[in-house]
Length: 437
Ligand code: ASP
Image (cartoon, rainbow, N blue to C red; front, side, top):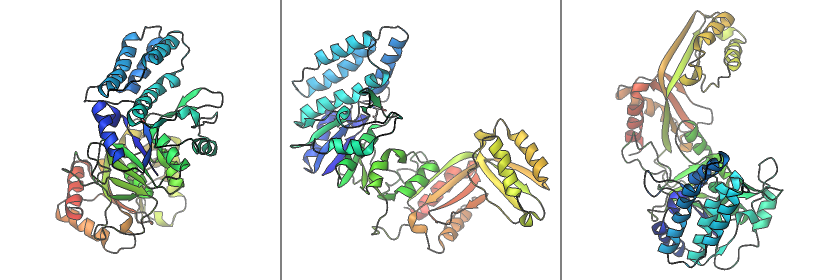
């Protein structure tokens, strides 16, 4: 069985519901469907979840939220009517409004109603069973999920053709509704896939998977067909906007592949994320993705004889720790060590930090370079292949891009280098055009 989750933009209007039905009909294994609240239909539209939080905020300040509530209700009734469904939702909305006015609804319960009404409508439209998330997603008092109880509660509930489940929320031990953090329907989908030992967890959204590079920099970048969780972590740490790995721990634990797909282009294969790939579908390609961030500062400390002294690095790092600054990279030479930190994080305290390093390390020179960008080429296939970094740096050199620092971890999952901010986009484009295209 496949567990499939549809995000907000896939649930935005009746037209999207029709696309979802076609996607499900094209594969009978797609039997368990997790849905988000209705998202934006166009750029300046509202997400239902945002409106629900807004409605709650009104009541907190004693302001009537009828106008906002009306917008929410009519979005759902419109979808119902356009799909020709006979679902008597008006009494449920009226009851919810009455309870809101009587201050009987918590913020989490109200926020959860977007997913709830989406799932009711989708279940009716597909002729699938509706399973409320409150009947199986079980939170502990500390807000973590009681995984075993949750899995146990879902098993046995899925009967017949298929089921639709609202994402984003579950139940606390005291019977109150609790939501995950924003975007949390991904977690519900992952929990359902893990509970049911799904063959795959398909996460349907409005892009055809994770892109190999930022489309604002590289024109029309290709999609990453296969990526491991470790690569994904590198990509998101170094700047790519991808699925938050924290949301998918249930499927990762059970080694269930996660496939990101596009509701608006259902024939695109999307991106598959899993622990490892035993077969290499494209042996010639060794870079999985290219990403990076701008605006780093390098603090460079040189002192003759440093390499034979003990504790210099510790003293430098202690100064930064005192200022609560997290260090991204520590490239070093024989008598030099540098720390690379986001410029923003040292903006307020840079001169104090330099003063303290000066006092505690007494370096011969202490330099600061800012306007530095960090670029990461990530790829599991770079490991144990000689010559890859040589090729990368030669290509950048030919393009006239000066490299300010180089960093490669011993797991060889990535090659990270620093360039001037102004060379950032060019460096990414040069790598993409030389090694991907
Ligand atoms: N609707 C919720 C949100 O907007 C949860 C989700 O869509 O995943 O954050």
